[in-house]
Image 1 (cartoon, one colour):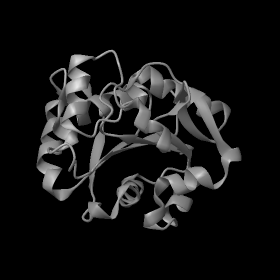
Image 2 (tube, rainbow, N blue to C red; image 1 turned 60 degrees about the vertical axis):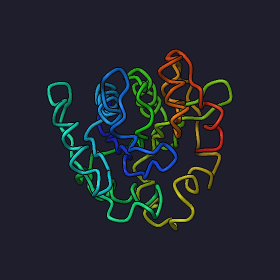
Image 3 (tube, rainbow, N blue to C red; image 1 turned 180 degrees about the vertical axis):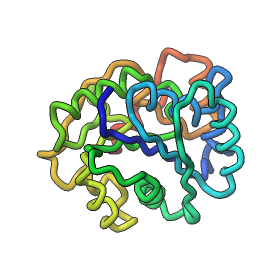
Length: 218
């Protein structure tokens, strides 16, 4: 297990296009937030911070508590103003991570990737061991996905980035420090935003119907 890589799971979005909170949608009977948390921890990332909005705190906490037997330690961070965008949730996650002088990096994961696998996480952590100063993006067939692994030095840069720029502003600032890491499996490239996307997930579980959206970010 790679030591020093934490994980921030972003689960504070309004899910307005979906019509219900993505964090609490289910894949094969398990809430999305639990699916992604399990993959991050089983892949070797620790500690884990889950960021959500106050209105979802009870539901997310109960989902994670119900899965306690299959999860390691985690903590919940609340974004009081999630409408400010993804970067505001990332700030909350960074603020909730414990201070650790041995920390070398952190993964930023999205809650709408329930098929994310531990092996995909391990590939990123292994690449981080070889390239500790690079921003690592999972990639396959010209697509970029999530989670993104940032070196620890990027924390201060993200905290200083204007909200309107979002995390992508840091990813795109210096292409020379970005490394695409080949990842197999569809989970790292999922992007479920609408009920139709969710129907496609259940109807065709071996495909990734929203993959075409992923090349716009990071």
